[in-house]
Length: 198
Ligand SMILES: [Zn+2]
Image (cartoon, rainbow, N blue to C red; front, side):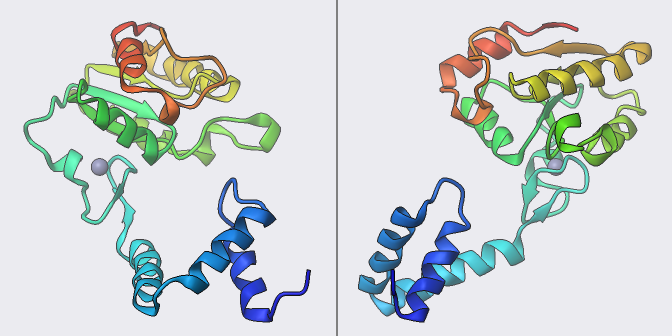
């Protein structure tokens, strides 16, 4: 299809987003052309600002605009419990549930030998460092119920075991092969409730 160059560039940009194919990208691009210039400027500024102002928390790895993040800084949270998740969006899913008042550790991925991702490629070394002080008494492994997520949970639990820290894995209610972020709050709440020793 022959679009004028600015439109094809815009379509190409939308196609860089997950789940957006050429058709949807074209629809979005034409929608942008119909938008008021002010709205488009606001939209583009939001994209640039989000990228520029957000960073990863140096303690837990969650996405934040302050370092340490608000969760790590919050003195009212239970510092003896640490929930390990794969991605920042999983922290957001857990926070929405409101049942968990501990701290988080974001791995930014999962161990996946097929994709060449080893334990040192994700945020595991920092996790081990955090466990060295005696504050944390339980590590809840809330990685996704996928092959990679399970393998990562097993790997971490084996590393932690000798230290005597309680290691649990969320279990019930989560569909196998699913993503934590898509679970509804009740399912996620049940999964947390049904965590087991690893
Ligand atoms: Zn943090």
